[in-house]
Length: 492
Ligand code: SF4
Image (cartoon, rainbow, N blue to C red; front, side, top):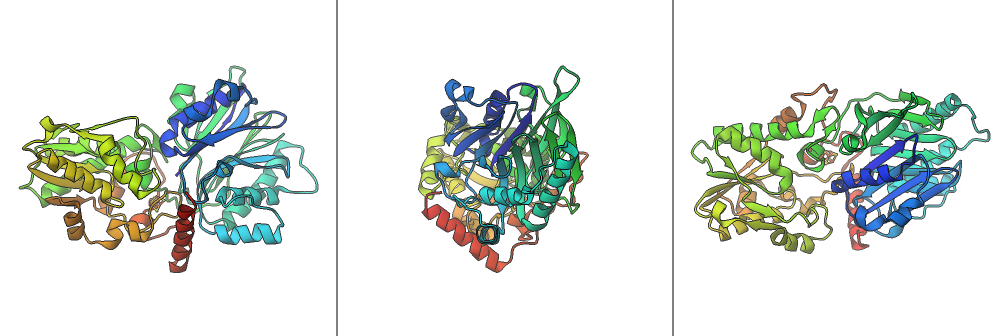
């Protein structure tokens, strides 16, 4: 999972792109990059958090009123400075691109690009493949001058992407002398929202981003989402063109609501906060039905992404919500950290139990999801060390049984606890007295109950094995898992 943004403005965009990276930092902490252009491209990027990469000195070099940014979180590709987005190519025009998602036919596309289209790939990143695929389809003998003609050319190029590139992709791109280009895969798997702000001269500035988390602080009014299969082009002169090139079912990622997105944002016209409240409410109702004799004394969220669901869970069953595990806010999210050992070490470093909240009590831990199970077990052990009488465990997400190939760095099947164990076994592994998973239907209900949305059915492939882009079979899973394992061996 990554975070992207693209801005067209009447004033320099570098600081607003920096702010966008800060507001999307939870979506990727490995690396970040910004590209802007005036007469030529300007790029700054580096490893780590935005505040470690960008300085007043290097920000000054990012001139121009149009630009894109990227927060990196490893999905596919190695992990070196060269893999940090945005990527760019000088032919045709000069194009830079940032992408959130994962291409499931990366290998076939890479072969096509290097062998048939005789382009050179400098990295193993799927974004570079997407960039060259796009560039190749934009390359013509004659350059259209008028914005409308250029938009027609863009439509052809992006249509070809939508028909041939499989998987999940939300994309921001800049083209020198042309403007800002935005598009989203046909099923809208990864999020992409848009905002607008008056520029004081009768026109508008525009922002596109993975989440609307920065809109308020930058003064942009939310204008909903980029439609699945839609292309938007903001020409240098401010003309706006858009077209939905392909219409398919709308299947946005449900895991954004469970874990990934910031709770204060609206994705796909659904409030993440409200969806999480409903997750807690639905789960509490199921708990009361199933375990009426096991009402806890307190509900503690762990990790903090479960705060909202824990709040409504506690409210629904009529017990106290407790911050019985204090989180050190200066440590990165463990789900994002590469490497199992680091993850194990970090739990106790990151969470400090409050004995007065725990000793002698029946404690219910609310987690957003159980992926590998090791972090959850560590938390249970910590509570027992601090004198909990009973430890119950409830999780806002159904069992995660399958890897994600659409841009969330899920482990391979071997590492997913629910891919290998039944619920009774998981309960024993976690060393808890009682365990309750959210039902799939209750999760869908929580996400889709309210909001003026057009979601047909969210993607839930990691839960139900239905890879909604119809692009994954057993051979593909093996290929993708091998590629992922190789990436990890190489340091991702
Ligand atoms: Fe989201 Fe899971 Fe679908 Fe991946 S497989 S896009 S994590 S719902």
